[in-house]
Length: 315
Image (tube, rainbow, N blue to C red; front, side, top):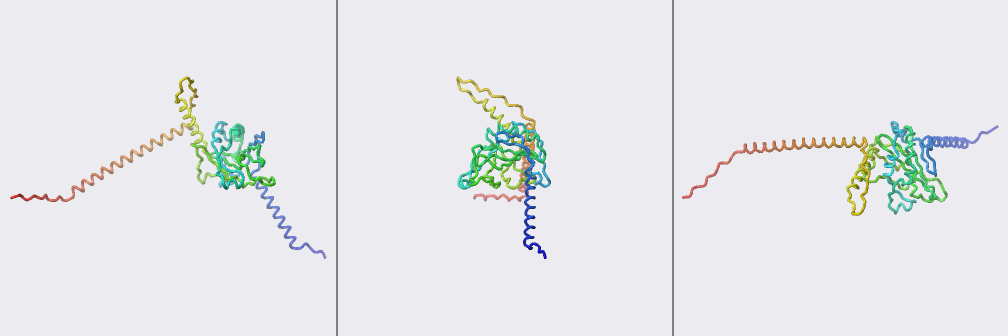
């Protein structure tokens, strides 16, 4: 008589099969989220390309990106050079040392990446984002500036997952970087620019462990930069020159872009509206004062008058 395998062995095989299927499902999910990458630029370790944007499907309803997008290299330069990042190297040092703020991209990075990113935005679909990876050749642990960019609505959204200036802790074995290790990074922008504060409905559905992110109002930042540059040119032209030195020749400010003129027009209209409201409030206040004066006079007239007292005549 043939005896079948013990019950525990049958359950063990079932559990192992279930575990294998679960791992396969997780792997397929990860591939679907971060897969479909296409490298557009790959030189000297610098990679820029397109990948599926996980925040599109994580929003309810799905929020599509404004891609393809047309940003010039100069506009990208203005946007990217305004971003700052702070963080620390290692894990122990971060407990005692205050994070330092540095440009997210140095001049060499910006010279290399602005053109490929502009090309990538023109090729991106509404469900994709532009990823970047800028290595640190001197790092023993493969530190690199990595992250992604996408445009949605009026905002340029940026997520940073690593930075080459902050060395990660020794893994004592060369293991891959832990995706939870963000080196205490925080993003900010240079004065007078400011990061956008989004309502909850416009906040992208960031993927797990994508905690270091920033949003910029594209038109607002570009307009502010144009005003700053125009003011700097005007101030430099007003500076007197010392005797015996040639005057500094400065370029005339270019014509304000259409969106800047529109913002100036809107601000002017807002000032006029505020002035009208102030005039109306001033008039109403004066009317109230006049009414109060009239009521006081009526009240004084309604009071009974005391009879006049006559002093007794002296003998």
